[in-house]
Image (cartoon, rainbow, N blue to C red; front, side, top):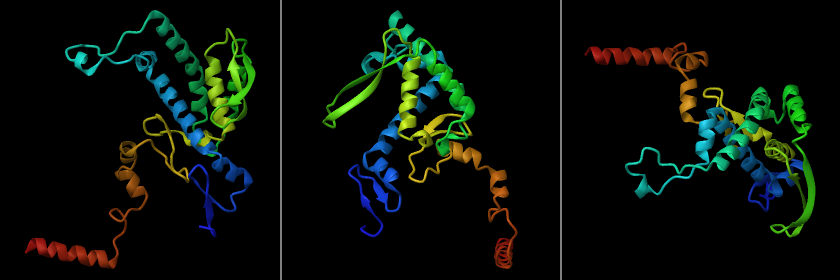
Length: 240
């Protein structure tokens, strides 16, 4: 352990030679917080892509399982005020969805396209996107801290911009991915960030027979002298 690396306070293994910035980033738990924020962004983007009805349904609590029996809709109906709040949040994320979709290919590298950066800057320059910088004591760490809080009268676009800004600050863009098969957003939990699709079903759908043949798998490749001899023996056994 002493020759290869050390164990950080957050439980993550930090290799030597990673540099002060990378080591401190993992040691202070920034990677774990970045994964959590990336998961929130992925969840909101998937809800937004599913439509307004799915977004509102995610805010509706369910009835007790004993009461659900025999009911057509097991969800508790929301008040008109709660539905209006959910619709405002949906409209805010609906503006950010195409911007982040434009940078889907750049996210694994921790980058955003010029179109996405310009679009987010335009959203931040709107009159209803105003923040106030506040200072206080962090009860968890026991030290002073600061935070950006939306001002009075600000819209829900502030919530979107604040979450994305914190994700960029923690260098967590590389955890956010979009599946090329089903176009759903997901979080890459691997250490080397090599996950390409959201799950096994999309991987099996992508890894079709044509893909295996293009990758020169043994079952589609040129047979060697040994494989031809084994196949000949098998044919003789079936003929007998």
